[in-house]
Length: 349
Image (tube, rainbow, N blue to C red; front, side, top):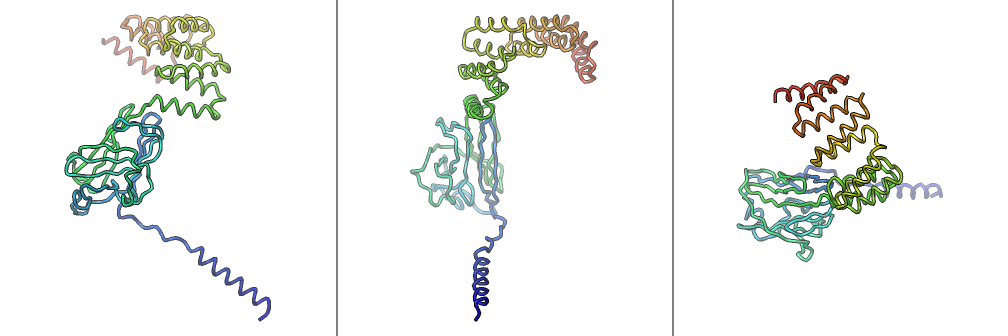
């Protein structure tokens, strides 16, 4: 055999070996219990549940297919997992951000829900109680028949979500609470450590959140001071003034406003007026809007805003007068329609 034939044989053998080792994995096939993913965002906190949906298929579920007194994966296939992008509170205990296994222990009475630090099990077969983060009890309720298990969030508020697990003729649920302000401010802290920390607008947005929601005041002052270093605008000074007021230093807040109100643009004064109106300071808001009318008498928007403040204060006659002035000046047909509708309501009232 020539050297060339030997080399050719070696090459073919290697090629055959590579072909065998490169065989594809098994083709995907539909699961009997299809996978599902459900998410709910509260504030900036995202709650995500990853689970598989078994079907009843004319079987006895509770106490049979799902035995009483045994840990159940709360689904099918891999154990169900629940993830939190920020810390949450469940059953009075803080659950750190992360992904957890969600198991349950059905009984003929109350059930036990298990949040496990191990989210990577197949079913509950190798479940280890020593890995529990927490356990708490729930009371299952009768539920309209559900062929396929479903997990969802039927009720939400500004700072909470109710997670419900429903299958066959039963459902159980439990609330998840979120400290929304803490989660938002922590997110802003992380963002500002990155590229957003170089932009005054981002710093001002974070500070404004603290001011509007009366939370994390010192952090808000630190952010707005950084923003003022690059953008010493009235809008930013007004944010700092509100933070100072929230801190309890109303005198310093007013001093700051008085010192910089003369530098404000029409839009900034208008925004400040609405801020006062939102705080329930109707008299102060009217004074600010009147100042804007005096300084920008050719702007329909100044009369429109003053009309709104007067309407909110109950001065219908003066509100109508200012809305009419705005109507005479505005060119936008959408705004004309809106103001005409307001005038119709005021005249009828």
